[in-house]
Length: 91
Image 1 (cartoon, helix red, strand yellow):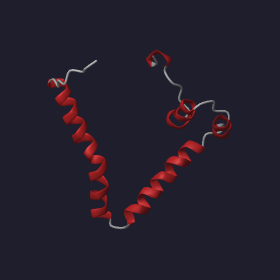
Image 2 (spheres, rainbow, N blue to C red):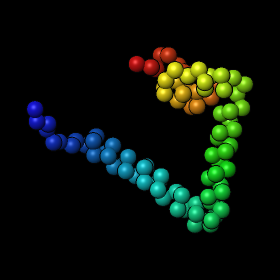
Image 3 (cartoon, rainbow, N blue to C red):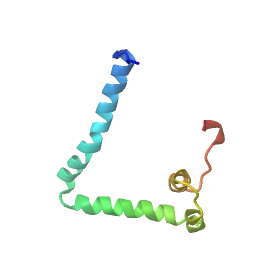
């Protein structure tokens, strides 16, 4: 089976938007380094520590972490942070 090699207007738009948005993942740390200097490494480390502290501060975090049955369950524990996933949006 051979695939058609076509790229419509919507595909070109999505490709261009994705490239522009994802380029900031590489540009932003450079801009921060330019303004903050070598302290940017410390700033990112402190931000990571604050994110970890936010996850761990929940009373039953460790019990849920140890009882997680799959990678999806671990992802939900970290990302939902005490909220429940809306069942109507799941497929």
